[in-house]
Amino acid sequence: MTSIGKTIAFFRKKKGMTQSELAEKMHVTDKAVSKWERDLSCPDVNTIAKLADILEVSVEELLNAKKYEYQNTKIKAMVNLVLKAVAVAMGIGVVVLTILKQIEITSSIILLGIGITCIGIYLLNDHQDVF
Image 1 (cartoon, rainbow, N blue to C red):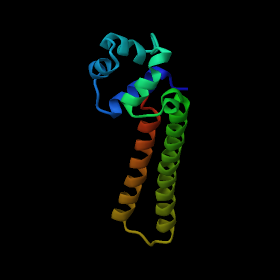
Image 2: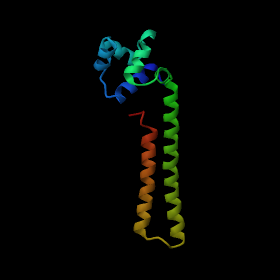
Image 3: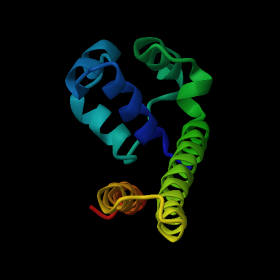
Image 4: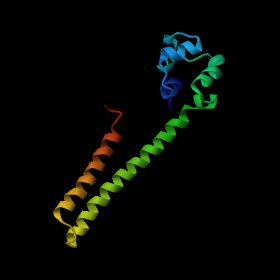
């Protein structure tokens, strides 16, 4: 589950605002916004509605951090599935066409290159949190 701080940072950046700009609109210090985003403190309950207005989201969206993480997880899983499927399809295609003697070496190399590229993207995408 994504924290309220990460959600505030996400929507702030999406609007192209700095922490200082958000702080000025909220009538707080930029240090307060920094603490919110690092989950060292939370905005006052009485200011949540104003924060949502400034970020142009609903209070529910602002507080429902789990929803965005779930959607991102589903999208990432679908992209990973497609990348693996393309890689497997390229490999199988080359093997079958080679057995049937219906493919030239240049075309085989191109198809295998596409498959290897998809696996590389999958591996980078799957381990992007490590970097």
